[in-house]
Image 1 (cartoon, one colour):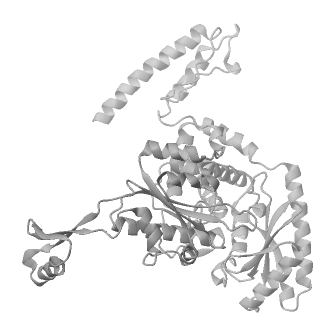
Image 2 (image 1 turned 120 degrees about the vertical axis):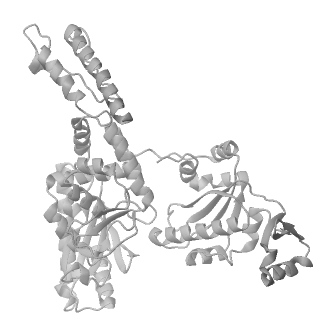
Image 3 (image 1 turned 90 degrees about the horizontal axis):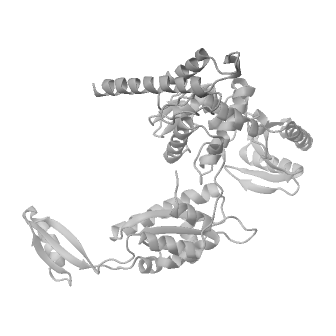
Length: 538
């Protein structure tokens, strides 16, 4: 009943506003600018040249119709053409120039020829391998300025795994003489060629995606599928979507970001038949959300977003995408739909705090942080960050178990700096770094017999305060082994804490504990990370 009365009241109010505004436009349009729109209603009263009378003023019919068109819209959704116009503007910005496309085509053709020649020099049956381009540059969904080329060399399944790696690396080093070996599930070569970053990856030439012997064997099937379902308009929408996700910090399937992969963005746009329908739908998602483009999924998942791989019914393409980034997309999609603006597609420029800035934040917050600073193991980010998060969680649990009130945590790894070892840090912001010298330890009710007697006997001759009764339970107040979190972190050695395997080894080699305002010493090289920590945004 309340909603109906409320709606009726709004209708009367806006009837009055529409009529008043239409009369205003009719009476004074020649001497005043059009009123843009009412922010809370989505109305826009704009006269066009096609609806003017002999005296150059807009006709009554044109203005009223324009007003009523806006009046018919809901109060919380701006006109569709506003969002469409914004997306069209960004589409222009995210479309590579013809010169850029031609340059990519030429470089890719040269790389494929070089790779094919290197394959031809291999012994049989490895010389039967073919070379194909995959990824966004193969599908027209790459953004201007992207200079990444992904080439896959598909080897016959008659080879074993060792031979795949051996011949794959031989081709990679022939095509990219200055390239370096990287390792995902198996090694591949990464290098540069005429200003483009190139990954040359070996895989098996399997019959179906579900026959894969390595994790990358299904990738060519992704390319083939998307070539069928993406036309030029949808590819353009994918580029705009990638730009949007980049701007809000949710693009990238690396295990540091845990966001939306390129393949996932392409599938979502194709599933919704365009970006605008996708954005509008995302505002109302109620996770977990599931999409199955080929209606063939056979597995269930606990992820916030589930997109069944069209080439593999048992795989969730969105498995890496954290619930936080699904929520981030929803938040920013809602804001974009409510207030379309091309500036929402521009990434925020990162800033860095200096040591004084860190100290100012700590002073304002009144918290007491500790941080563990050490040399990160020499592994790629996709191996490093899961171990950092595991270690962070393990130490947080231990601090909590010991009575320290952990307010918030974070972990950072410094950028690569040539051959210099990277630094990593585990940050624990505490309500207080120190706690009382004693802790309360509550025992069982007296009436539980042997268990209660055992508790009493174990503390009766100790130096603890008690045992005494609180209600019907035994209680003791016992000394804490550590009352200062920094001392605990410096002296414990983390021997009883669940850590990432390589983080545990790195900490065994040495670490530094920063406490209180000493955390400001981390401003170099973690100033940008600390700025994002102390000034977080969605």
